Image (cartoon, rainbow, N blue to C red; front, side, top):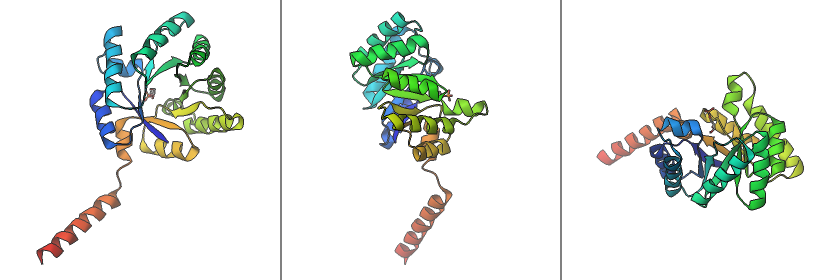
Length: 219
Ligand code: G3P
C-alpha cells in the first residue's frame, strides 16, 4: 500500500519524506488555506515546492466547478510538474472533465467520494485515483471502511485500474484496516503515520537491551 501525506504543510511533508516511506502528497483547498496559502500564483508555486520535496504523485485540486473551468484549470495545473495529479470533485461536470483528462493523458484524483456508486462512475470515467473520505463517513455514523471494501470488490470484479486512495484517514487503525482490505493508497496526517512506529513493548524492550549492554560493558 502506498503512503501519501494529506497536508500542505512543507515541514510535515519534509518530515514524512525523511522517514523514507512517503509515496506522494494530497492537498485540498482547506489544507492550503490552513497554511495561509492563497491566490492562484502562490498556490501554484506551493504545488511546485511540494513536488521539489517529494518524488511522487501530488494531488492539486481545481476550484472551478463548471466543465470548461475545470478543464482550463486542470490543464494549467498538470503543466506545473510531471507528478501533478489533477484533483476533481465528484460532481456531474467533474466526471465529464475526468473523462476528458483521461483521453488527454492527464492523471486525475476524483475527490469527495462517499458512495460505491460514485466510485464506480469515477472508474468508468478513467480516474487514476478515487478518494473515498472514510473519516467523514465515520463522523456521521456510517462505516467508512465498509465503503473501501465495497469499492475494492467492485473494482476487482471488473478489473478497473483506478487506484483506491483512502482519504480522511484519522488514526493508525484506519491505515491498518485499509491495508487489510487492500486499498491501494492511504493518505494520512503525519500523526497517523508516526503513530505506526509506536509500541510500548518496543520502547521497554529497547531500554532493557541498552541497559543490559551498558551493564556488560561496565564489567
Ligand atoms: O484531502 C481530503 C481528506 O483527506 C480530508 O480529510 O480529515 O478533512 O476529513 P478530513
